[in-house]
Image 1 (cartoon, each protein chain N blue to C red):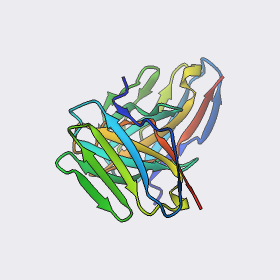
Image 2: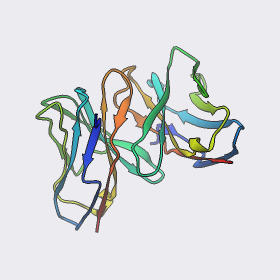
Image 3: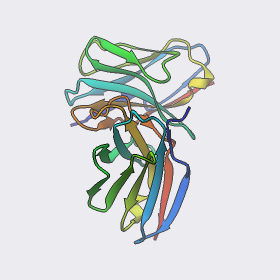
Image 4: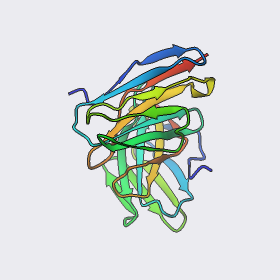
Length: 110
Length: 113
């Protein structure tokens, strides 16, 4: 039982490059979300989804796109990476209770 | 505008003593509060929660207190153990479902043997 799986765990990008952070869950949860963690700022919600085909913006959505074509997957896309997007990204799902987080993806944009 | 604030970036206590972590919030629409614990290189894990209809919730060594009039909550760990050393995040939601959580900045707890 893997829970929430994020790939890659580490990534270095150059400014302007694009990439996708993958998130997969095997808990059949409808709710999935992406957070970023930055020093001194806690975790901030980027985008979330309450089910396949439904997504919405969180607190800091600019520069990120998401889609939800299946219950299991919720990829986060950076279309043109910027140094301000250097962060640790966490995917989280929720059933009827608390959030379950993945182990995180550390992204560095040079 | 930091709606959930943890004013202490770090806290150090001796093993066996009480750890008290504090959290303040400004949004009166918050209805559900949670604490998460995070070890290095891991994702946050749920610790304990409380809804606004209660003022205390206990789970083993962990107790969360909520003071709605002061918009303040605290997490008590008794007795503290070295394995409790981690970053603790306070979080709040306007929904009892716990969606759209707003997190505080985190407090690094160190429990010394």
